Image 1 (cartoon, helix red, strand yellow):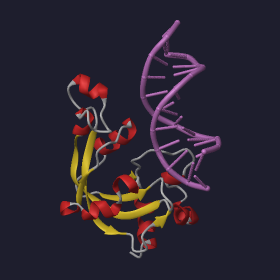
Image 2 (cartoon, chains in turn orange, purple, brown):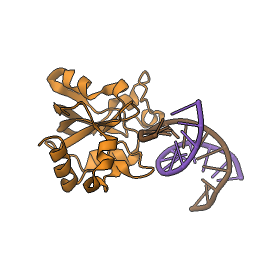
Image 3 (tube, chains in turn cyan, orange, red):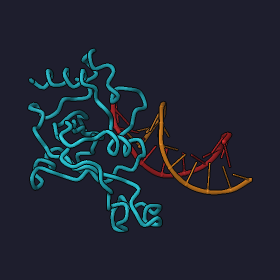
Image 4 (cartoon, protein in one colour):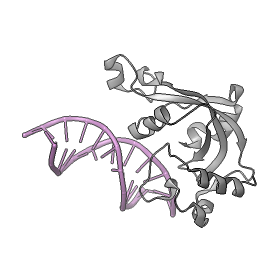
Length: 151
DNA sequence: GCCAACGTTGGC
DNA sequence: GCCAACGTTGGC
């Protein structure tokens, strides 16, 4: 799950009540559908910092609430306000709640580190033009990442 | 700040 | 339903 640390960093998640935050503001259908159709309570999520000095995985979280309507789409004061949702009278977007588990010990497992590991060459985050803010990670990729994170 | 890549919008 | 124009993403 990508986030800009200036907006919501992994540290922000860890500092939130119950270390839990709602993943509001996803406004891309493919990313929404991943949350709606694939996310289950208990699933592990990698929190990735984008648009920052050292982009990469900053921490591990887990899904503690499955997809439900994202009310920010109906909030005119929100930067995530969606006129089409407001017109329809209900949010077309969903969010999940995630709870921080642990930060990456070194601070970040950088994109460069990920790119340097041949076993991770299949990761979507490395693919050219891949901008999706929610990306699936395979079990084998996760196994390698866990090794790199010291188990 | 650049710019490639991609998604969305809207006129036709 | 095509597709040009526009907006956004995000590494570099």
